[in-house]
Length: 323
Ligand SMILES: Cc1ncc(COP(=O)(O)O)c(C=O)c1O
Image (cartoon, rainbow, N blue to C red; front, side, top):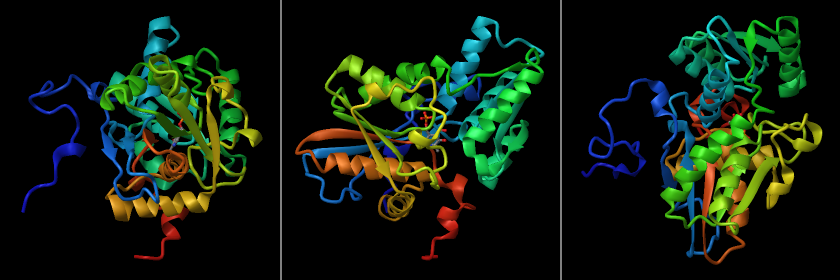
């Protein structure tokens, strides 16, 4: 029996790159693209769909990119110096990413997150040695933002707060890495980029880079259809504190996706593509198919922020009846 093709292997093969890197931080980025061949639902043969697998980052999500960039920027500006603690509010993945970056650099990390984030996330953050402060689960990510502001106001000199919602280094990380990677990986053929919006860093920075290469590239955002949703990491903008880095005018299209259709898509991507993905990936893929179905030709790249094993204790999998 032949082995699976190596298309999912990390791009740094022994012949193409170094045999080792100095630290986990050099493993951030350069994630693979995988072609989606089955979960296409009536999309024309001239349209190719590729998923960018951000779960391959060392902290397990797309958030490694902005976490690293914001910390590097803080060090460069002198805002983060030895003795300070990295503090931020996070719905989960950014916390894990900051905890990973802090551990690799030797800086302590303190995170404020809603008490109801998944058990796996809490455990991973603890494993990287970060301290966690819980906010009211009923207040969602906005509750964590408010509590974090309070902690900082009480002790401003003790902390460095990357402030992912308002820090230009967040979207800049994607302008400098995610966008160029997608451009290179598609040989400049990408016609549509689809991603969910949380802080909006991914879609803003990647979108800006792709448009700088080809202004005709369409930037499509997937957002939860309503305020109460089960799509961890995503924000329903109309009912949320709007991130300072979010510029809605730079999007070509925004599609509202229901929690149910996103979950169903995650189940299908697992069974039909062999990709175990996080819930926001399902939402992004639903949006990608809606866009792709309108086309005769094109190259649609959809960003999958993380893998699904981080969510096995959540409602999405507890509601799964086909075990
Ligand atoms: C699972 C997941 N999906 C999507 C996003 C959205 O990414 P961004 O904050 O860049 O908009 C996040 C952000 O935290 C996330 O954790």
